[in-house]
Length: 225
Image (cartoon, rainbow, N blue to C red):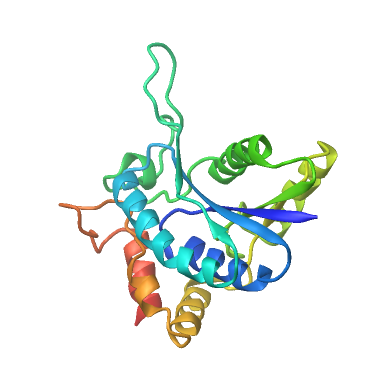
């Protein structure tokens, strides 16, 4: 059975390298195409993240094409529209990713389950009956909704729904800042430093530049030293 990789790309280091690793691992295993998907859920840095997705996709396209795999243009799913009545998606969140400012709350409430569900819905609409979809995530074994257990449980849900969808986490073993540094160093040593430089990590950009102070900037700084 052929497979379509639906890559949940955020424009960050983890999802970018997870996609690259998935392309390399799945090479020659009946993968017909890669569909990069970016979900705009109202995060403060969505513009910078989307630009990063466009840049890394061009680089990843070359990697996929070299292995005989088609790499489609990135798809942007917008969840942050402003309805006349009710709340927009994640408007209730206290997270720095959504609200910006000085909040020290990184978590967006149940975000990864929402994102996976959205990509699964999109994937189901595009996947022929004789193929299966693999949702590639940049999850690392760190938070409650990026751990192996979470991925395993999501796959059980899709199985119970009789959906030909599997959630994959190619970089899940790289835990914490130490793991992120190991991941970056590993791919830099293989000649992918330019790809890593195209990624975006900042939650609260200033004048279209990384703020240098948010949790994501600090993690990236530690991981790239």
